[in-house]
Image 1 (cartoon, rainbow, N blue to C red):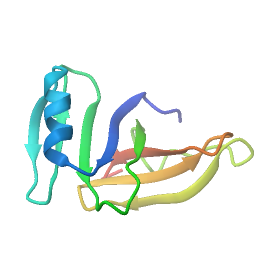
Image 2: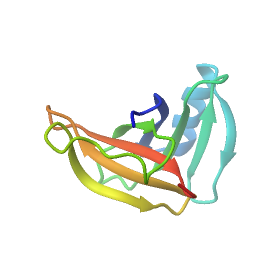
Image 3: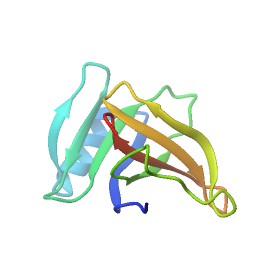
Length: 115
């Protein structure tokens, strides 16, 4: 089973408010904010952007999240895809697997929790 394209972009930041304002200025609308300096924005029907604030001693990062229709049916070729972490339940109601590309970048693959 293949991925179904980009589901989201996950960003960490040192200032949730400034980051959210930046994306709102670019046309993204706030879908929700949490009570711990994070939230989700979206522009039309495209992938969502989830932003989470991290402490100053952590380097901000960007991660692309690819969508898969189900965790049980997704089996990447181990000769071509290095699985960093297998599918695990997340606290936000999905299953997530991480893989490393040939250049060392880490990618997340997200599936619905029930699959």
